[in-house]
Amino acid sequence: MFQAPHGYETSPSPRIGEPEPTTGTAPPVVADTLMPTGRPSAKSAADRPPTSTQRDAFFDNAKYLAIVLVAVAHSWEPVMDGSRATKALYLFVYSFHMPAFIVISGYFSRSFTARPHQIKRMITGIAVPYVVFETAYSLFKRYADDTPGHPVSLLDPWYLTWFLIALFVWRLTTPLWNSLRHPLAVSLVIASLASLTPSIGDDLDLQRVLQFAPYFVVGLCLKPEHFQMVRRREVRLLAVPLFAGALVFSYWAATRMRNGWLYHNSSAQELDSPWWAGPVMTFALFGCSLLLTAGFLAWVPGRRTWFTALGAGTICGYLLHGFLIKGANFAGVFDTYPWLKEPAGKVALSLAAAVAVTALCSPPVRRLLRFATEPEMKWAFTRDEAPAPASARTATAATATATATKETGRAPVAAPDSATGPAPELVSVATSESRS
Image (cartoon, rainbow, N blue to C red; front, side, top):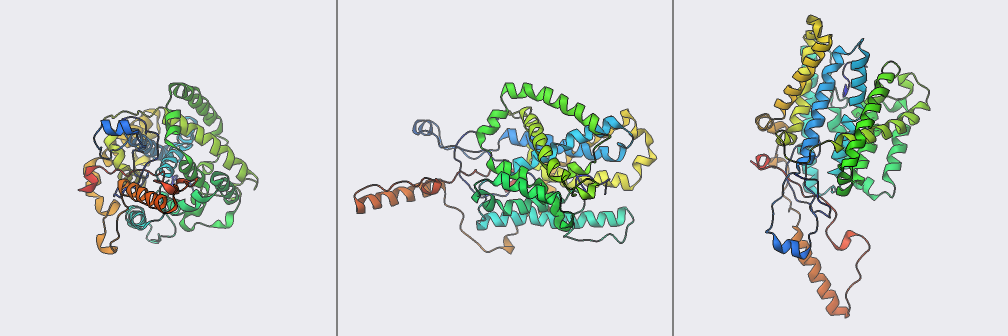
């Protein structure tokens, strides 16, 4: 994923409806896994007691499987030179593992309107982990790699911390994207322009922020029914030839395509290509990545599995597995044990990476790192009132309507948008563990 992504080269589907927001503290690497809740009919509401918020197993499963692919792909980086098959698998996985993360992050950022409690969550759940881990990774490289001159800079994300600063920018600009008539078209134009502008520089890894932004905007535009659509049986079956074709193409491209195109951190000129290749590759990769992301999501189980609970801890797996991969490289493990570059060694390395990241996503690790990944920091903020619950807003609206009817003799006409009712937002669900 780095320098971020590269580093070696310079339960049931969500229910359809109009959900409501609450506050909570949850890990942000892929925005909180939430269960969209709909407006139930009067009968269904009466037939069942009030339910508490709950996590959606589908999104937790998707996050866990995606983070496993991230870790496994990173483990291939030191050993894929000279192996066309490994390079093909690497390109294949890289074409959708981060887009999938980013689409899901956008989907669960739809309700962001920069309210005070949302800004607090951004600071404690994204900005603070970025500062902590960017500093930690910089110091780790300085001493583990024996490079005392390596700077500690919050303006130049190193290795995998780019995603945190990118998510911060994307979520902060969510109200802007939501206000545009054609946000996806605008984001693609911006990404295309960035791909042919080498003068953007490395500050905050802005190339990545701009070139990956369309995937986040796609998530903002999605609705629960879109996820139901990709999980249908026919889509799952279509994903099989799609993946097969993508693997064949990746094998063909392995000796012809620069990895940098999938990292989205360089302009076309920096990849020794003509300027016009930037916009062309931006649109081509966007289309391919979305298709493969849909295929990936089609095969994600919607029921609870043994790894569902691990989806809540993906921020820990994401931020910690880089120390293992880079540490092994700095220690010369891949040079000391050349058998790791053989097919059997690569399989063993892949399994080790999958097991390691699984352990890093576990609840004990999450609890241990909560001070850095989910700090409350009540001392740093002034108190503000939490958003009114849905019932209170509905009662207020009903009172206002009754008053207007009494004064004017006729009921007010509803506005054509959601201003007269609850906004189409998501109920934030954090596990009881994140509340303790």
